[in-house]
Image (cartoon, rainbow, N blue to C red; front, side, top):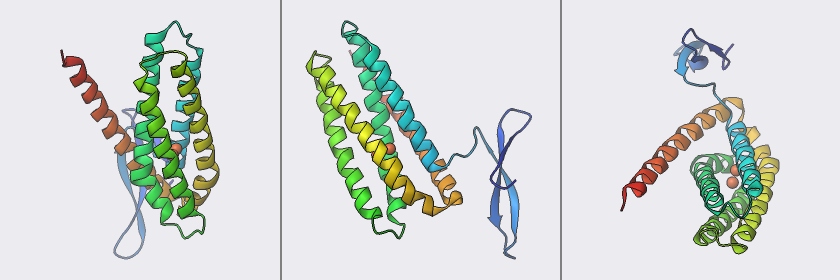
Amino acid sequence: MIGEGVADWAGRSLILDRAGGQSGRNFASIIFRGDLLMKAIDLLKKDHDTVKKMFAAFEKMGSHAQKDRLAQAEEICEELRIHAAIEEEIFYPAVKSVRDKEAKFDVEEALEEHKQMKSAMEDALKDEGQEPAFAAKMKVLKENVEHHAGEEEKEIFKVARKLGDDRLEELGQQLQERKEALQAEDSGNHRQARKKP
Ligand SMILES: [Fe+2]
Ligand SMILES: [Fe+2]
């Protein structure tokens, strides 16, 4: 039952957590959370799938829907920016701590790809939806993101699994909390931007 969630009467989930007592015995404590604990790699994979769907929706919009396409591109870039930030702040340092010959190289490579992705996003959004350059830039961004996410899932997640389930759940919780904080910051910034004359 440890680490498993069950729904309580209020529809929240109860997570039974393991904590070591002074005697070294484990006992179960109950943590109330709005959702079940998710392992870091599952949370990141879910983000990858979300952004792939967002790109697919973008591509379905005709070039006549310029305003909607630009709004969708902005949402994709916001999602990617937050995803990259939580990986850089929380996930990659944890992966780097694993004793694995390839881990440090894989993380450095991923960081380089993040840098390229950020400048490609900046470049695409500068175009204000001007076709056909805008569509081309978004297509290249999508291909780069798919390549990056694929390598991450294959190489980096493989190393991350060595951290073990408990640590991956702990990291998952940290990623989720940081993600929510960055999303709240972003929606605050948007509100401010809308207020400006
Ligand atoms: Fe990444
Ligand atoms: Fe990722």
